Amino acid sequence: MNPSPPFPPAHAFPRDFVWGVATSAFQIEGGAAEDGKGPSIWDAFCRVPGAIADASSGDVACDHYHRWAADLDLVKSLGVDAYRFSVSWPRVQPDGRGEWNAKGLDFYDRLVDGLVSRGIQPYLTLNHWDLPEALQARGGWAARDTVHRFVDYARHVARRLGDRVATITTHNEPWVIATLGHEHGNFAPGIKSRATAMQVSHHLMLSHGLALQALRAQGCKSRLGIVLNLSPIRAATDDADDIAQARLEDGRSVRWYMDPLFNGAYPPDVLEHLGRDAPRVEAGDLETLRTPMDFLGLNYYTRSVVSASGAWDIKASGKPLTDMGWEVYPEGLTELLLRLHRDWRLPPLYVKENGAAFQDSLVDGRVHDIERTDYIARHIAAVAEALRQGVPMAGYMVWSLLDNFEWASGYEKRFGIVHVDYATQRRTLKDSALWYRDFLQAQKAARRVPASSSNEFAGS
Image 1 (cartoon, rainbow, N blue to C red):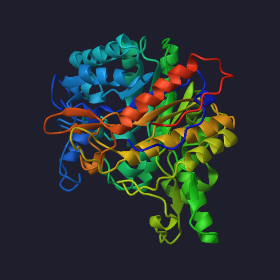
Image 2 (tube, rainbow, N blue to C red):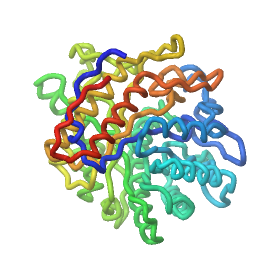
Image 3 (cartoon, helix red, strand yellow):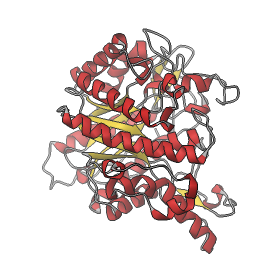
Image 4 (tube, rainbow, N blue to C red):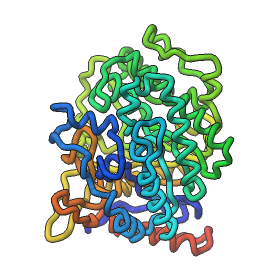
C-alpha cells in the first residue's frame, strides 16, 4: 500500500473513543420478501422505471440476511469497537401497524447476540429510510398518524433489543427523507412537493422527540439520539446574492434541524422563506422536539458551495472528487464540528458516517483503493483537530463496511472498505480496510500506555 498521510498522536483520542463501521438494512440485507417481511417504500421505488440508475433493486443486495454471521466475523477481524446497523421496519412489522413478525424480530435478536458475543457494541438505527409501503399508502410521513406508528415501533424494538444495544438512533438523515424523497423526488417515495417535504421534516422530528420520551418512560437503558447529515455551507463568491443564498441553504439543511432539537424553534428566516409551505406545528410540538438527547450523530461527506446563479463549478477548487462527484474536503469536517460546538449546547458527538465512493478494481485478489484510504485518514485527522479544540467527540464510524445498494445509484457506486462481488457475494478486504484495521490496532496499543506518553505514528 502507498504511504498514507501522517496521523496525529494516538493519544489525541480519548481512551473511551468509539471506533466503528456502519451499514443499513435495505442496502445490505436482501431477503426482500422472505420470512414475512413486507415491502418498504424503497422496494416500491425500485420498481419505478428510471428511478434507479442501473435498474437494480435491494432484493438481494449483499445477502446479509443469510450471511450475517460471516459478516460479523469480518467486522470483528477489523478490531472495531462498534457496528452501526439499522432495523428494517417492514421486516419486523410488515404493515407498520398491527401484527409483529416473529421471524424478523428473531433475525435482529441473532444479529445483536452475535455482535455481543464477538465483543462488538451494537449501535442500532430505527429508521434508515425504509418506511413500510403500507404506511405510505396511508399518507406516509406526511400523515401525523405515522408519528405515532413510529413511536409504537420504537417501543417494541427497544423492548426486544434495548437490553443489549449501546445506542438507539431514531432517524438517519431526516433531511434526505424530507428533501430528496418528498421535494426533489429522486429518492423514495418520489414525491415532488416542497410543502409536503417540510411537513414530513416536522413529523420526523416530532416522532424523534416522542420516541425518546416513550423509550425513557419504559426504562430503556440504551443511549438515545438522532443522526443528521450536515455540511458547512459556503458562498461561491463575496457577491451579496451568493452570501444570502448560502445563508438560506444553511438554514434549510443545518439550522432547520439543529435549532428545534436544541432551541425548540425553527429558524425564523427559513419560515419566512417557506411562507405557505411551512409545516403545520401543533401546540406542544416544539417542546417535544427539544427532548434532551444522550448523543448527536452526524454524517459528513463533503462541504457545500452555493451560488445564487447555480454557476459554481465544483472543479474550480482543484480538490479531488469522489466517484459521486463530491469534493474531498476533510477540513470541512473540523469546521463543521467547531461550528456546532460554538452555536449549540451539545451532548457528546459521533461521526456516524464518513467515507467515499471510488471506482475500485479487484486485481489478483486485492483492491488498492489509495484514494479511499487517504480520504478516511484525513477525516480522522480532522476529528482529532476538533477534539484538540475542545469539541466533545465520542466516536467515528466508517461508511461503509460493505459495497452495497447505493440508493438511486444502484450498485454503480462503491463506498465499502470491503469489496463485494455481487455475482458470487464474495467479500474481499480492500486496502482501506487493512489500513483501518492496523490503525485501530495502534489505537488499542496507545490505550495501554500512559496518556502522557507520545506515540506518534503514520499510516502503513
